[in-house]
Image (cartoon, rainbow, N blue to C red):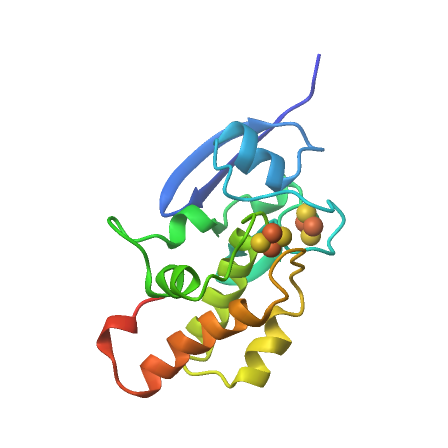
Length: 166
Ligand code: FES
Ligand code: FES
């Protein structure tokens, strides 16, 4: 018989209670148990950032964590970054700047960029590049991605309320 452990946490502001095997990663729990497949799995060893989620507001590699380690915490996945309708300012900027091609890396970039913009509402381009250096993309060459995040920061700097939420 498989041994399981009871966990309870909040995922995208909803309470979740589940029984998980101790070896289940947070990424697998989110994708398989909760069907939150926006969290992608690329390298599965902490390099690519495709699996990034927010854990109590901080970016975390969900492939490197066990689901049991998220017990009692607040997890936000890329699905949780979307407004009830339409796109967030950051998502819209990704779309406008053609900041994705295959889209595999995009959830991780959105999570990393969202966290940066929460902490530093108007980061410099250098700061954006530095922050996103923890995410790998095989398609875009990174420039459109950095442009998209910088566009949100620039609109905020100009006092455009439409970009107030990421
Ligand atoms: S899948 Fe987690 S860092 Fe690559
Ligand atoms: S858009 Fe394809 S890997 Fe980034």
